[in-house]
Length: 158
Image (cartoon, rainbow, N blue to C red):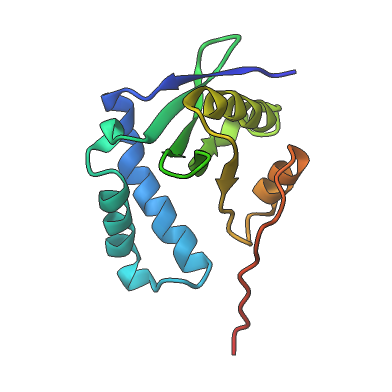
């Protein structure tokens, strides 16, 4: 079985992560039908500015590089928000990405289990996340490791 470690993202890793992720989030919202292509990049940038005003040092935001425990090589990223003001505290996964060439090797499952350990260490009693409806691979992974559906958003194109 694949195993991973989570290491805090360095400033250099964060600077490489941010522009790519802002674009990816913009593209996902266009694909989901929430935003137009023309407005998507500006809206995505605004979301990230709000959530990460101090970058990787923003309180309660925990950004990690996912590493293959065997080789130590970077294989992806994870971003967890500790919702510490909730009673009991909860964690929310804002972003998880396994490098494309590392997918299908068990790292997704290993990462989800490592996130549980890290969330417990941070004091969380539960973990939540959002998955776009078109991302069936991620949806299947989350169900496999025990996540339950809490709501559905639906739309019909006219």
